[in-house]
Image (tube, rainbow, N blue to C red; front, side):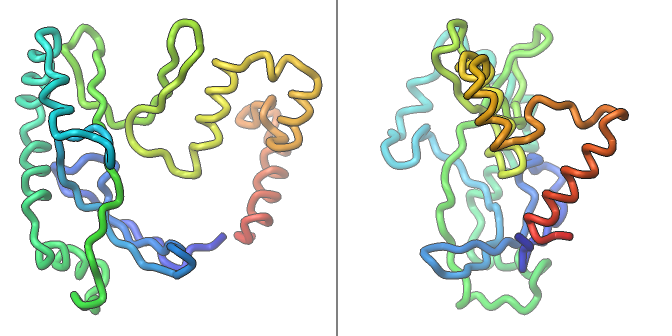
Length: 217
C-alpha cells in the first residue's frame, strides 16, 4: 500500500547504514502514528526484557578480548556516535526532527523504546573481526537451527530470508509435489530466475501484477 509519510534523509558521517533518519507512518494499537528516528543508544543487555546488564561483561572471554579491543579502536567514530546519541536530550532530538518537519512541536512527540539490536562482529579474511551491518542467516552444520544476525530486515527481504531457511533446513518440503505446488501458489516465481534476459517478459508480467496488488500502478 502507498505510504502517507515515508521520507528518508542522509545518515551522519559516523552513523551506520541502518541509522538513516526517516519519517514513517505506522498503525499502532489501531491508531495512525507518525514516527521519526532512529536514535541510537547502548546497553550491556543482550535481550530487551529478560536480559541482564551483566550479559556483555560475562561474554568477554580470553579468546575474544583482542577482537573487541580491535573493533573499538578501529571504529572510534562509531563509538563517539553512540556516546553522542546516548547522551542526547529531547531538545537535541527535536532539532534533528526539525530538519525533516520544521513545524514539529515538542508537546506532540514522545520518546519510545523501539527495541534492541545485538551487533554482530564477524571474522573475515584473517582479520580479528569487523562490525557487520548486513543481514545474514547463520545455520549450523546439521541444519537443525538457523539464526538471523545483523540489521533488522524489512518486508522487502523477509520472504527471501524465509526461503533461504526453508531451502537449508527443510529441503524435503520442496522435494514433494505438494510442497512445490504450495510454494508455487504462494510465490509463483520461486523456482524461476526472472533476472535472466530471456525472462524479461516474465519479469514485466510479475512486476505489473505486484504493482497492481500494492495499488502502485
